[in-house]
Every structure is written in structure tokens, then in C-alpha cells.
Amino acid sequence: MRNTLRRDKAGQALAEMVLAVPLLFLMAAGAFQFIQVFLARAQLEHACGVVMRQWAAGARRDSTAEEGIWAALGPDRVRFDRSTLRLTASSRPLDAPAIPGETKDGLPDSDSWVKGGIGAGTRWEVRVRCRPVPLFSRFLRDGIPFTVRCAVIPGKPLPGVGR
Image (tube, rainbow, N blue to C red; front, side, top):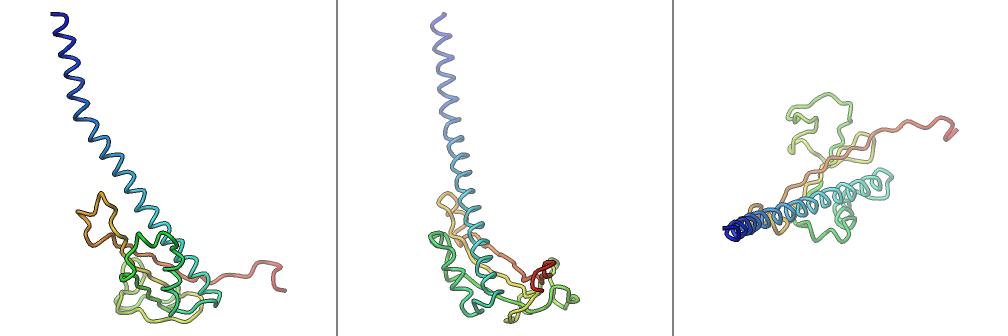
């Protein structure tokens, strides 16, 4: 009787292990895949920031900003679909009154966007699709859409600088 109880407990532990290990593996793989998507988003935001700073300084123009973003992504380009990269700019000042068609987040809708010139208050919207990570590729066949919004904010001179 004593040996039978031991075998039953060992069998129960084995059955629980068979059920638990694949679930733990899927959770760990899902967390790893989520981290990859998060890092791709962070890299896109960094690349946009680099190019927008260059643009605000006058070192880059609208026509080369998309190429600049693509180049600034560096080795992370493999995570993105180049054909979906879209950059739109609006020269509407940041403190301008609301316009018809403005979305709830304060940015104009896509019909209101125009190519803007260099200046404080220029707003940017960058859209691109991230290629799905392997675990989610079955559910997200078209990729994960990312939208990054940036603005050139007017700066005030620092006290004692430029006198």
C-alpha cells in the first residue's frame, strides 16, 4: 500500500509538470516577443527624434526625412516594412486655435496635413508597420501599426547666452 501511494503522487506530479511546463514556456516566449515589439517602438521613436532634431536645425529637408528615419533605424530596419513608412508634417503653430477636422488629441486629421517649412510649431506624424514577431505572426499578418507624433517646440534663450 505504501508503494502505491508513492507512485500515485509521483504520477500526479508528472502530470502537473506536463501541463505546467508548456504554459510557462509560452508565457516566457510571449514576454520575450513583447519586449522585442517594445524595443522596436523605442528605436522608431529615437530615430524620429534624431531626424526631427536635424530637420529643426536646418540640416535636413522634408524630402529626405523619410530616408533619414529609415537610415537612423540602423540594424532594427529588419523589424519594419519600408513600404509603409509615411511622414506628414503640419506647419500649424502649436498655439493656433482648433481647426475643422482636428482629432481629439489636438492633431489635425490626415486631410488637413500639409508639407511644412522649418519653424517652431511644426508637427510631424510618422506611420510605419512593424513586422510581426514570430509568436504573433499568425494573428497580426499585416504587422503592428506604429504612429509617432513629434513637434518642434519654440525655445526660449537661456539667460546670459547669446548676448
